[in-house]
Image 1 (spheres, rainbow, N blue to C red):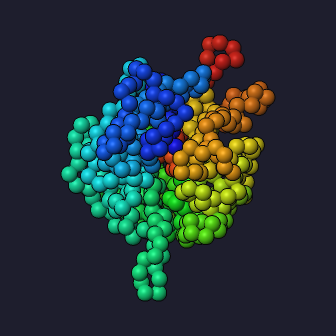
Image 2: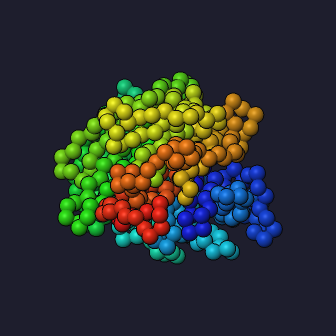
Length: 459
């Protein structure tokens, strides 16, 4: 359900929810005693719900969780350790810390947050701290406190409340809650402000003053956040030499579902087509507008990963329905490459298809070798294997075309073919990639070194 690369140790942290009280990995003896799953009955949970996955050997190291991480968030500190916020039930107000020493395990603080954060988004700020935005029933945001401390109050955010979709009868009474404002898209702009997108509306927030800098036009076409579950990324940021001009930033949002799609999927098992469009907007401009493009196919619940080349990979998800249990059909098996620098009608390219359906609760992680680790998908309420779309415990690695050895042999080192990029790993869950970021450094020169055929780069 949740995954992130820990670059300090080159392992991928994976964890599920604890609410089901089972998994396929027993808690090892050195992690005993068992977790108390129910303090009223004394029921014990002796299963592992969190592991470190070795990306070279596929070996697993068991970790022990106490609070429920179902639909939580996460991000890396400046020293590359993990901070996770929110979850379900007793984990909704929790903050968890995980360092990367050989004997380290979760440190959990169940009352750290002022508001419950189930389906909330966590983003690293310019000063290295964290903000957590939204969540079920939480029309607010707050800054994650230092380890061991607790927040007394959150900050109300009208955008989250105003984008909370509901269906009302002719008498005005609410008869179905759609939400479409969970796991909002939040991106840190180069100017230190925060782009916050919920449902189909967005704004720029100044965390230093908690003031709204500007509001953006609505993105037409449908809803983009959970359970409509589109994808979003901050496009690669190009730095300039000498800092003589402001660094611009552009956000991409793709897919999702019609605003009432969850109602039809949940109550009638009618799975409406997902959205097929993408919108881009330059968030550092004063009065920007959305530019709309069309993907090769509809996609809801997909994952979007920024590749080292500056291109973006869209994968996983379905062509119909929405997130939540058993509310989708028609898996989208075909990954799509989005090339933001290509000509307008040549930006999308379909790639080799997978054979494994990965819809609700799938994840994707960019690895240090340039491959993408793909995992997860549980469209069921728990671990179920004798159903049409069983719980997926297999992982796979997707190899983008830049890893093709034949293509590498054809490449020649010259200035036009060289780029130096820096990547911040994403925390992926429920189709959202938190904190994902690629910086393209300014290239000054490409020079020959003293060894024949070996070259150097100055960036």
